[in-house]
Length: 115
Image 1: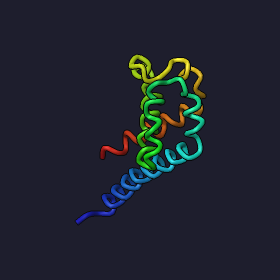
Image 2: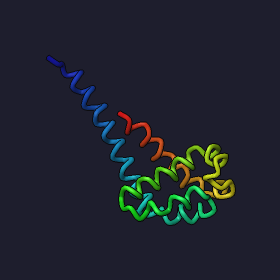
Image 3: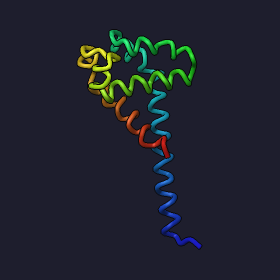
Image 4: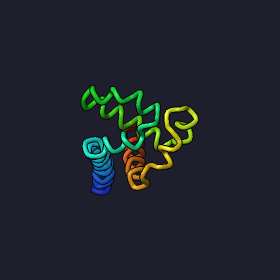
């Protein structure tokens, strides 16, 4: 049988796991519905973003793909700039608060989903 400590451990870390997942989902939804147009305007010279703009026509799944691509470019900018997907001037002129918010939700998402 299990004791009370084991039950509290499972409930705490299981709740933390699902809580972070919900925060990630709602945070990405907020950025997509309220900030995506601003993000696309700020990255208008980046070829990788322009190539993926048709994803937005695929509905929720397309919005998820687009946000994941934007997040990957902004989370790993040196690779994206070297690969030609992200314009260096676009990255340097990107607002730091919005950049931190995107990185938070993308990194949180990458840590939560594989489990």
